[in-house]
Length: 428
Image 1 (cartoon, one colour):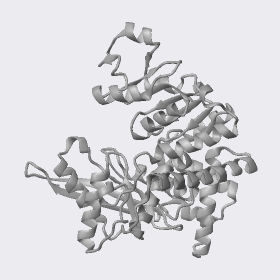
Image 2 (image 1 turned 180 degrees about the vertical axis):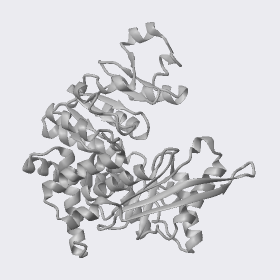
Image 3 (image 1 turned 120 degrees about the vertical axis):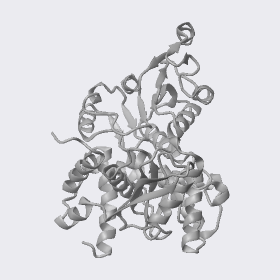
Image 4 (image 1 turned 135 degrees about the horizontal axis):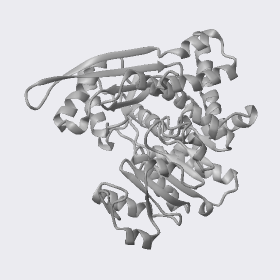
């Protein structure tokens, strides 16, 4: 069997949906590959006086519905295959929440943790220099992704404006507030997922206090959704980061966990120093340590994978006990696992809907950049809730009408909207 990659996993989901839609050969051809794959070598001067080159990519999947949109990741394993898959998913994601963007993704093969701030800035500016003809407010609007942040976006916007001699606050999103950013961007991914869960619980007549939640990944999205759910009365029973997790069937306080993570660098920091844990104290508090693999299989109602891709596979899908999975991470579930989960009656709210809050607020930032306005936090929240729930309801209606999974329904909604625009443009 050929090895599964992010792009082959995307193609598997795509193929199923194009068959449901009865798509023409013409449509299939357009969706089979990205419209553009731009590659370059970024050569920068290092602090020690040497020069070093880093492979860089910008993959533009489809712009039928508007300018390409998608983050740039700085990661040693960012390769063309991964970036292609993420660009394709972005195109579907923007269509699912019905914002006027296409899908793209960028990557630089580097480890910013091993570089100085000055070297990271040089890479950011070199990236814009390399791709300045391929990006722009009405062409392709990058954003932060893995290992990139508002500072990096600010350098990129500045470099673009220098190179093009323009004022372009809307060329890049995810910028600092002081440099054209939007309120609410930092919590947007978690907020979007939270709004969907609340609507789902309401429709299924669940009481929040009776629902147990497990969150894998205590980074930006995972920590924020744990806080939001805990504050709303849900019982968060387990959380983890890259070093492992903690579990208490009676519930844990994410605020307390965050405090110890900030102090010690780990969610287990209240009880453990490295691999040495205070067993008596854990026993008294009813807490156990768990691995990330064990965490996925904990008895709970809602599982939120908010860290890595490809963590729910055909190997462990049968052991997942959650009734609902909310994918805040990109691509955490393989197509083979989807089949098993569906058979077992597990409802998966897919990444292209569940984590679309981030790109939705990026759209608001783009709109604010174009108009020169600054929206209030309340307005951002209200508009985010409106768009994310309209997307959820469109997907839910498709689930009911076609009797298919939420992932397939989300792809059906997104791809149908893309095909409509392609027809108007005379592409098909």
